[in-house]
Amino acid sequence: MTQTSSASSAQARPKSVPLWRKWLPYLSAVGSLLAVWQLSALFLPAYLLPDVPDVFIRLFGSMNDAEFTDGIQSSLLRLAWGYPIACLFGAALGLIAGVSQAFAVYLRSLISILQSIPPITWVPFFVILLGFGNATIVTVIVIASFFPMALSVLNATEGVNRTHLELARVLGANKLQLLTKVFAPESLPAFVTGAQVAFGNAWRSLIAAEMVGGAAIGLGYYSRWRGEVADMEGVLMSILVIGTIAAILDLVLLEWLKRRLLRYRYVKTGGAE
Image (cartoon, rainbow, N blue to C red; front, side):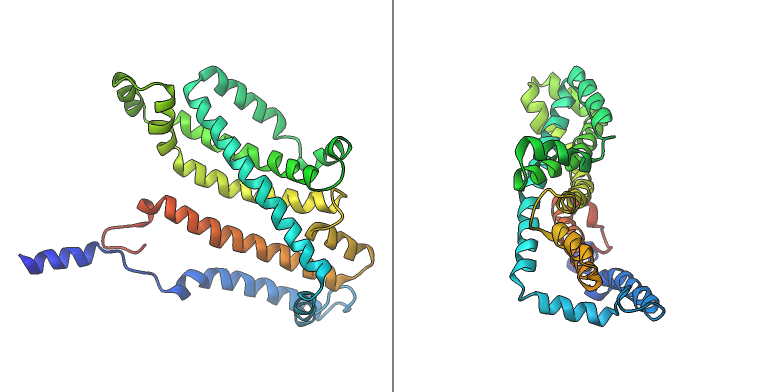
């Protein structure tokens, strides 16, 4: 009996996937992109497409350049302000729509109208209204990442199990309890999905807003300025850093958060996590 129980416990424990198997697809994707870049550089002049090693050497040297590193810090700080605000605001309104049909129709109509407007087109408006700098860019980030988060949670509230909802009402749950005990737990997967989609919108809008004149410092501004002086190494270095930071935040930080919040989806009996 003891041996049977031990065997069952061992089988139920998730087997850890080797680290190299988790990272191999990402490393393969990066390697293929670098290979295409380097092969293309063999057929083009260096001033049009520098070699991969030259750009990496420039990148390592720029780590001591205060202008470049301050630009990275400024971009990350703006993202740290705008992205969480949009996620929380979008999730809150999406959940409220679950308990109010009239508000759900209003919110969906508002999203359908405003999300068709590219976020970057708001930059001139907010530059006039708020001036150049962080306020304008953070506002654009919030606008860009609010819609996917709100829409994701809104759709999730509409798909909440009606049996759970009716049972909670029979037991006397008020609207606040419905939000916290029924809608919020069942909308958690949608919240995570919406957060990942919202991050992509937030990061792209941040860089674009910095490029079109919303700020005088940042990764987007640095890339535009390098392009204006025909510094192709600087442009490619900026693109490399922008892509690397986005990949780290999305594939590492947000993926880790998703697995922590939705751990039950990744644990399989007798399988791998």
